[in-house]
Image (tube, rainbow, N blue to C red):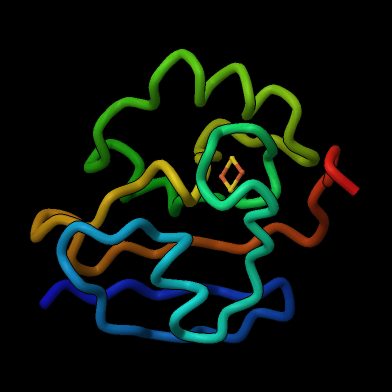
Length: 109
Ligand code: FES
């Protein structure tokens, strides 16, 4: 099973075992990792914003246009930002490192 490491804003590394087909958001929630995901994966918020490690970014499929539009609204956007609800776990992402941003912009609050 692929493993994913989440890095909290405080610098804590949390390695979790992912299940194929789930999203990073689902994985984080299942693992009690603090990603909000206000719209539960409907691409209607940007609170599932994660920052993928630069070395890992190109291993992921390209974001869709809808994801990019929503990412534009994310607080603290970086060149390797993605939405956690749009990254689906595959064998290829084994070893992925994603950083949790310090703040998210919740438009749904
Ligand atoms: Fe809202 Fe990902 S949970 S866009």
